[in-house]
Image (cartoon, rainbow, N blue to C red):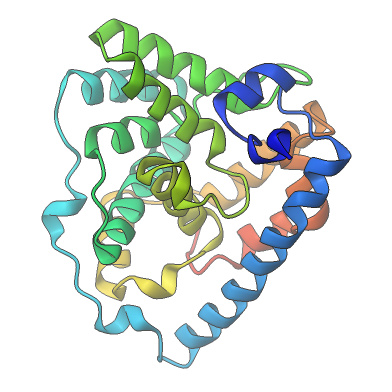
Amino acid sequence: MNAVADLGTRSWVDRTGGQLTGAERRSLLRPLARTHAVNAVGRLSMLARLNSGRRAQVDPARLVPPSSALTRAAVEQAQRLLSPALLNHSYRTFAFGAALGALEGLTVDAELLFAAALLHDTGLPTSERNVDFTRGSARIARDVAEEVGLSSAATETMRTAITLHYSPRVPLAHGPEAYLLSAGAGLDVGGLRSWHLPPDLLASVLEQHPRLGFKSEFAAAFRAEAARVPRGRAQFLRRYGAFDLAIKLAPFHG
């Protein structure tokens, strides 16, 4: 049970390389099914114009990226390692995660959330065979943290948020940074919880950070990841989560 509860954390990725056991795969089936069910209901509410986001309000200041030595170093690494489409996805991930956090009244370290968002996919372009790409992303985050003298506790928070982010339904118990990083990435990739946000906020974020063909580029990157790590989470999501279709059906163009 402890091994299953540990799934997706930085220590789990370091220990396993991101390879799922049979018990771990089974443990992900229920949260994955629930995610699909909730997504279907939420997307229908958007089509019927009954979604809660139409009445929601988010202070625009919550979406402004913080400026610090950590965030500037994270931006520098992300700009160096990511394509324009993946870089813009990282900015949208922060904005959507921060907006969802504001609606839920969560207290979050905005610097750690932003740095994690900018770095969460940096390992994807150069992932190793049989090693989950988030291990590379977490190592890059560690190097950034060491460069700016971040505390060990804050570094661990950021790195575990990164390794957890694409496990189905990351709970708040893992901390608000991990919870909101996962929520923001899931919204941008598959439209998850998009019905909670105001339409003008979604449009504004997309205008500031255009998608630039993100759907096709990200789907191709995840196919490559699934092939490199055949027992990893990317392959699990493609096999059981109809991940390519979820990307295609996300309520965004491009």
